[in-house]
Image (cartoon, rainbow, N blue to C red; front, side, top):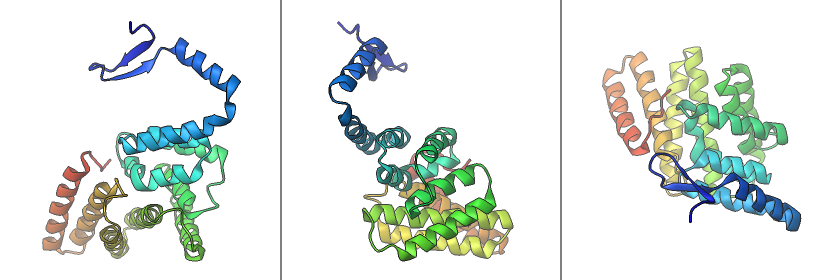
Length: 239
């Protein structure tokens, strides 16, 4: 008897508890062990991240108040979604985080603020976020994990690309793209699920810069690489 579960989507491959049962279980948990909620949200966040659902994972990390986990999911998995049709969902969870914690306190959290300012096209604030994050990174001697550090550095370069394009400064665009690609080569893809999408963004923008610098052969090579990177990413990465 499946009365208390509800199938999701047309294929019914995913299921959830009926809202009445879910509310009953949630009430029982709050009554008997409310202190376990952050831990359970953290477990859910890790599971969703590992199964390719970074935005839902970030929602649970925010609910847990685990800002290190939220930032790690953003920089290793979710950030490229800001240039896809999922951008609004990503921004919703970042704006919820901004209401609950100080995004200016650490470089990985500053990236969260920077992605928000990029989405809202607040370029002066974006430039300030990038500068502040780099200053904090210069003083930071310890990170929770290497993937968070690598992802943070890569995103800062790609956001610099966005600033360069907005100003029409193609040398800045090319330099930031090449820096991002070097970081990606050093980082590897195992702990950085967003790496193919990051590569697609870097190589595509490098092609634009080379085109405007009249390096047509270089532009063609970059665009061909970007096409391959988009295929590896498994989703559209350009808005």
